[in-house]
Image (cartoon, rainbow, N blue to C red; front, side, top):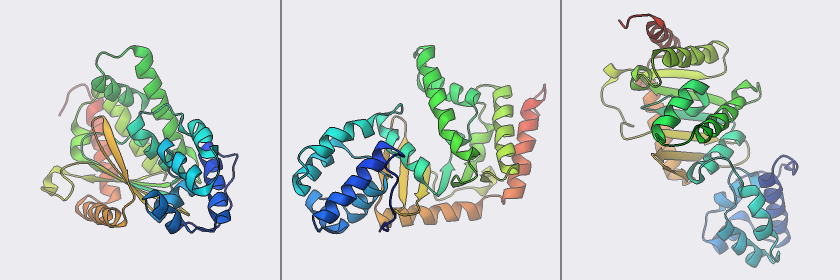
Length: 279
């Protein structure tokens, strides 16, 4: 459960709502578990709302106003916290990502968004939306680049990524785009900004062949799991589900190349892409 650390209300609308929610809950004499029962959610979910790691949906805002006797305060103010440039299915995950202290991710088919270059991201978005106008694609690329700024912050989260070799071998955007993309990952590793391991083809069958995963840990809120497929995603806080996926991630790291050999492989593939002829 989150501790009693004061939040900075100026940091974001979600932080302001979280601080107000905690104040109203404590004023009503309710624990997080007791308030969660009134809303038919877990106590950890209430803790995540208070910590600002999850956004407040309108249906919960209405119930909170009813249970806590706050008139329409949460309903009026959750709109400001809900504005986002990201798709609806992804926005909560992005906001949680910005608050996380540790992020662990397995990606089977593409380079994770935090590690992408603009050119690689552009190729991915164009593949997703082949008929979209250029302005739409550029807005998506800009938002993705903005997300990655957390890697430039020395106080940013620990990012540990397991990349399937398929993500490195698939020519997304062409050879030069791939050379730049893999060179960017290698540079992040060499600057000690991320930990990257490669799950090679010869590892054979593994525990997460059906999809990707992202695990996020926080200083004062329970961990979250994000699962995504094309056009949709789900943020999960069930402790059993989080533990299960954490074990799978640990198993994947054990099956993958160690970080140093992974870096060598990434740089070798990047060099191959940069050559005039493919080996």
